[in-house]
Amino acid sequence: MKEIMNDVIKKVKKKGEWKALIVDQLSMRMLSSCCKMTDIMTEGITSKTPAHSHFYSPHKTQLKNSVMERLAEQLATLCATLKEYPAVRYRGEYKDNATLAQLVQDKLDAYKADDPTMGEGPDKARSQLIILDRAFDPVSPVLHELTFQAMGYDLLPIENDVYKYG
Image (cartoon, rainbow, N blue to C red; front, top):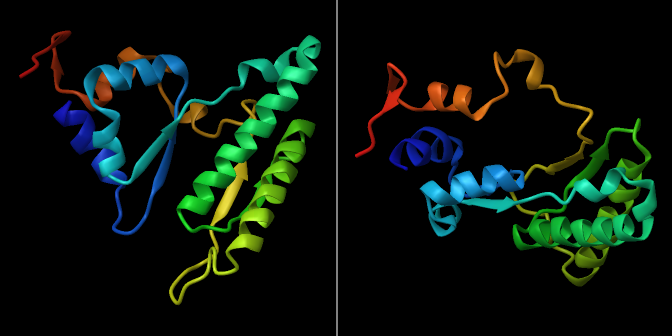
């Protein structure tokens, strides 16, 4: 746990900033097994598991719409909580990105109407919310492997296939 907190979580912490950690359900279970979510939140990081599995079935359009609506509300609420009013950007090759971007923008505009100072401050640059679909992954080509085992070897002191905890 100490290695994950020190080498992964604390390395991205900057005073006065929050980060969003978006992980799939398996990664969330792994993360939960080695540290408490409250410890991660104390470091200025909020976590979220995406609900992307319903986006790809043509038979679940109604479910997809409600999932996108909920996701937009959660993203806008996160931004409002962090006092951010980001410019919303999206990858145009996937039409649902534009739909989600518009839903988020509408909700952000509603929050901004209630709090006109949202996203403003003397030393505050406008943040960016970038919406990408799973087809766009700039990291994968530079990784040597896409497994948790490879991540373990990269992040933990494993010697001769043995990790000594404690």
